[in-house]
Amino acid sequence: MSLNLIEDPWIPVFCADGARRVIAPWEMAEADILRPDWPRPDLNIACNELLIGLVFLADPPLSNGDWQRRIAPDPQRLKDRLAPFAPAFNLLGEGPLFLQDQEPLPGQPGSVDMLFIDSAGANAAKNNADLMVHRQRYGRLDLPLAAMALYAFQAHAPSGGAGNRTSMRGGGPLVTLVDPGDGLWPLVWANVPCGTPGTLDELPWMRPTHVSDKGQQTLPPEGRVFGAEAFFGMPRRLRLVGDDTGVAGVVQKPWGTNYAKWKHPLSPHYRIKAGEEWLPRHPRAGRFGYRNWLGIVAQAVGSENSERALSLRDWGQRGGEASVVVGGWAMDNMKPRDFTLSVQPLLNLPVEAEDRLVGMILAAEAAGVALRGALEPVLAAGEAREAEREAFFVATEDRLLKHVQDLKAGNDPRPAWLADLRAQALRQFDAQAVPGLDRRETDRIAQIVKARKGLAGAFAGYGKHGREMFTQLGMDLPTTSKGKAA
Image (cartoon, rainbow, N blue to C red; front, side, top):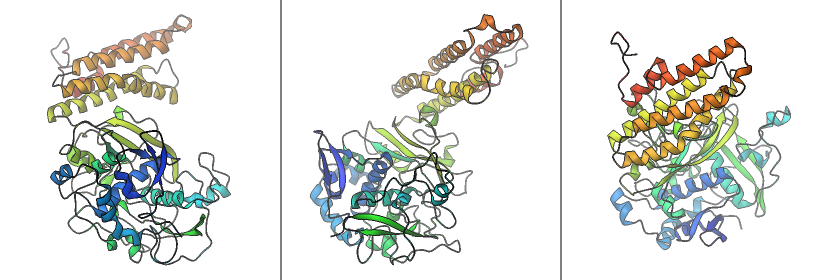
């Protein structure tokens, strides 16, 4: 018998006692389950999204007050609420199939590799250009892995050539999940939006595909920015080819659903200016740290054009201390560059404290640019200086986290933060400039001495970067001999 994603156990999980087991979705509400246990981090992020979507589809809280009243897990209630949706969640067989076109698609099946974002496309493999992506890793997928890969692919689908649509949030969206730190059910329930239960006909594979060959767009339900389909979008037209022992191929046709103007509740969004369409944020390659917080885990400058994910905004009315799981593929058009997976603090600060935090982060950006510029007579242009700038943010992160606690306590850590930035910038400059200084040419020594003086001056408020730091920190600029600000 083929896999049913509502009724059958198929999700591997890691438990509090160190055991691993396989559960049906309704069992996510059992207290001892810590997290999904798929072999890839992108599948684990997607699995959390799927479970959140199932609860939103079948039994969401009506309000944040109702969310509080139902915070205790109730596996039997969840099982009962999910049961009516079982006919829509068969992976293979007759009738509607999970996240697949209603009717079989003609054509030669491609490799199941295509369900993974970091797999080589047909042209990359043909041209032997798959250095950073991979080919022929998966000859056949067992049914649970195929189901999870299919969901992750539809939810995060990148550009895929002519007519192959990206996901509702574009290719490789940024996902931010509130994590209270108490296991799987608390994480899932923390991120379920308020709403009313959905219906089978809200699932896109329960109706003919919205073919978009003429640019047709699929908008969110009238008067709303998302519905249940936000968690079950179907931008790609796919049919899995397999049997009860596994999936061996995938048939794909172009022009799947073309989503427009949806705002996914688990992703931050921005817009260029008021009145324009909201766009989902995407991760950048590299380490995710405090320099990436603005607009994602902290409010951004110009907040009327930037929104954290609904899940993070709701948490202010739901719970207390929590972390934010940040995940997603950094993409270069069709090419995956890096997978981001990071845990960051959830910042629910008073307005004044949040404004101070924004200024502190922007001051650090100015300090990093000042350091990079000062290193010009020491290091070659390009990657070496940029690496020092990145190292600057890594080295100051612990201090920034301490100052966040100071902000929460009602203190003003801005002067101490400026001192921290100064100490780290000069430490890095000296580490690069001082060794071997006496063996350099005289004119180069003079340039280095001048650069260090300029860097130190920036932290006293002088120069372009110094003015920027002091302005962002709300500190008075020094005055010149003529009484004008530097």
